[in-house]
Image 1 (cartoon, rainbow over the protein chains, first blue to last red):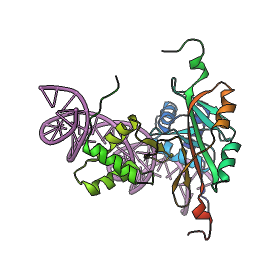
Image 2 (cartoon, chains in turn yellow, blue, cyan, red):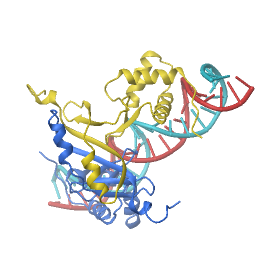
Image 3 (cartoon, chains in turn purple, brown, blue, cyan):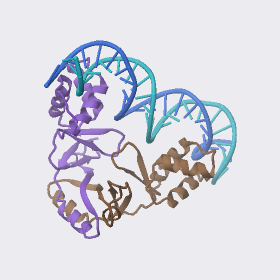
Length: 131
Length: 131
DNA sequence: ATATCTGCAAATCATTTGCGAATTG
DNA sequence: CAATTCGCAAATGATTTGCAGATAT
């Protein structure tokens, strides 16, 4: 049986906070933001609820090979581009078809891709290189 | 100036150990294996040398969204398929062209992809489902 | 010689867990 | 009221760092 969840003020607050942040924040960043509104919230609550929200399919968990995980309110299928210069993470919508096609012929039964792109973002290339 | 590295018995042992392992092991798994040969080796030595070997381009560091990093002696450009059932990690060689093409048109200057595929491997699909 | 490297132990960072109290349906 | 959730503090797991002594060039 799939788990039953009650509503909680804290869980809603965490979801709202993530919705407001467009930066693909870490659990710690969400925790800091939530604490600004209610300094009573414990960090275990944030971690626990991020896991629950993920199980509920309300949010997505990301990882970019750096220690910490990041969270995303955008649950539609998409991937991410990280700018090496400014660190900004942008959503990208690649074409998966060709990837999957050539590999399924080789006997791979792939049901999920995790794709990350790295490079220099438009803003950092354009007029004058920051830094 | 790029750092200067001396040779060390331990570093060579770590590299040889990784070469022998075909499993994309974690630092801890490499540490355990190295300790079987020389029980004096400290774990800091393993972590330090894996970082150095990565900087030297001798090995590649992988991460699959689980806490720990994994290491790979195969430095040619390739990606990985992880079997959800048996956990085995296989090398895959996808066609990047189409991915990069459609996105560079949109102004992304992508210089690196990190791609992971998940699914069920051939061995786990075939005759009788294990478990 | 002397800068690099080692082993050890302690520190750090992200995340999880145990527990008694508070909250929700 | 009975299960879920909370806040706290302590535990965990992976990795890093400080340091005195050993080693490589």
